[in-house]
Length: 173
Image (tube, rainbow, N blue to C red):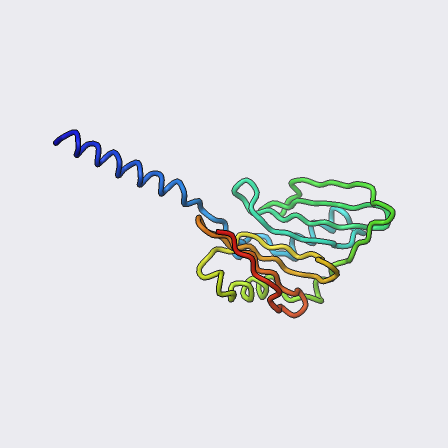
């Protein structure tokens, strides 16, 4: 009888610990300490003449990190900016002669705050946490891609960056 009770307790503790291990803490990008404007300013301090081509905010090593890509006539650039608005990593490489780039003009698009709010309205999102977003050109259209997730589900919502119109939703269970 005592062995069964001990076995039952050990089993319950093991299952509880396993369940806790599956619940990873998700970083919420809406609580980023560095604004998009601050990150872009840091990018331009690093590469003053570069035009923006893509921006992403996502988790890297349990911290939020901006990754900003840009270009000029001769080179393409990538800058990673950490939660302290410092350059964590930067790259520069020669631009391919036939490579086409589209400049992002932030004033032409809805704000990140509005994009997060509009994306959260998708019925598939429910109460998921916004864990990442990007602003980039896809097939000639500038889009926000917003990622939501919890321990069981991931949802990506794609929005037209100019209008905020929902283009599609992709779910991965």
